Image 1 (cartoon, rainbow, N blue to C red):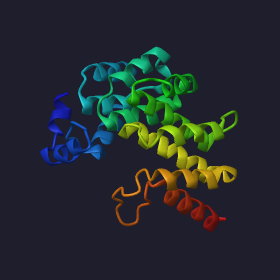
Image 2: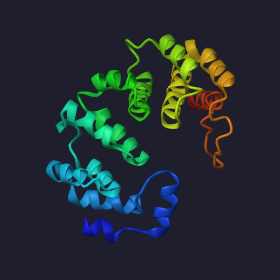
Image 3: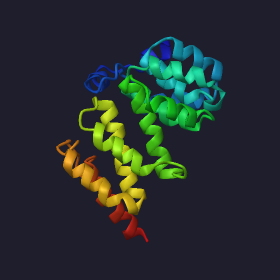
Image 4: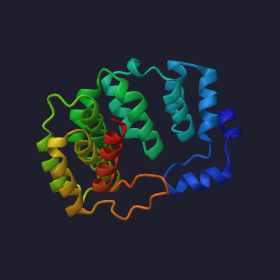
Length: 215
């Protein structure tokens, strides 16, 4: 904890706090520290319990994802306030867990929109990597009905799922683009030069173009 405090940079904290992340540690330095510590599950659990955002990010980097029980991961996602911790927990831990599918189903239906957004993030991952058994048309029905008025984090995750369906599944592409065009979600999101807009019709069209350019 003292070492993490020593890495604190007020300028980085100022930028991060605009995104809801209450820490000021350079992530490159955090990753270097994690590399030095290597995998330490017990330390990871103790760091998580501090409730400190930088400590939790470090915990995620040094934990053994498959060592967590299902209920433990469920508690952790509900304890997570900072968006970066939430994203890393889903992407670096839950996606590698044997409980990922069970949690995906439970979280997608959760009344807490932040928890539900984790379920949708896991669904977007399955759409891209293991779509067998998913009802893609049904997912589009839910997105069409609920995405426009969903809270920010849930809306973002649903939009990601919409884009993945359009990118990866040609038979649903026209409908995915049409839903994006009608709902206009993230249409005006500020995008840096050279980056793809998160507005689903633009995102889908660009990624499909790249796929064809690469073949």
